[in-house]
Length: 390
Image 1 (cartoon, rainbow, N blue to C red):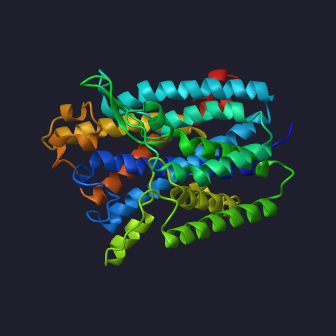
Image 2: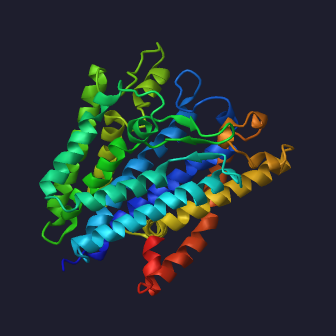
């Protein structure tokens, strides 16, 4: 069996941890920022640069984590035969789908009637794992070609629409569907091209085998990272392909910059993935040898990302309920069939951006001891099979 040096695993844990921490900023903003109830933070017309970049930096989270999930699957596969790895990916994928629909959906809204369900990050990770369970039986070159074709060509489907088709929305269109007058579901994370991001990560796992030295790995990742960003710049300049909504010139440099960087996330466009995965490659290439207390801090979250993801949603929502009560809106306003920013009665609730950042830092620091303790438990009880699902 090929062993993976501990330092290499820590570089991946570091990126996972950073992604988890940055992701919490966006969720704190949703629940605590005053302007969240009035306009989209990515809207160049209404947003400001501080608000825009608070949202923008979190765009790197989902692509990086999907990519790293595929890379981690490759590493797990070094210890399991293909059939066993497929079974594991299918079971974990189904578990994640259940978590999204039940545990995560309740955490976002505290609605016991489950009147609104979003097929979002955890759901797409689960389905992508199930698809990857089949893909791993194909030769690596085929998986790599499949991943590249889906990522680079999927924007050709932008103008393909099937009115009322839930199946098509699941594949490539973010839409709302009502199944009763009071219940609806949103395909927030269509599967194309997310499944290809994970399978691409799986292909990159071979870079972390002992047959590839760190110098070669750094060179490859730097080349791919710089190449991705250069292609992003070229396609952005042409402004014809790679995103369903071309950027616009506003006569104001800040608004034009926001328009250029506001690539489509639902589903993620080619430009969005070139930008975010390009950054991911550069991070992995150049921070592999990084050490210190800060690295150790973020690695704790990176080793227990699923555990952290679930508890941070509930913790932020509970804090928001207390904040709503303290500011005269009542905690009941945070028990809603809609996502918080869609609740009309909460317009006027919230705080300025500095307060949002302070709350975010507090959330991360308060959850750190719990995550560290769970991480220690996982490390001490590797024989417990169910921990691999957390």
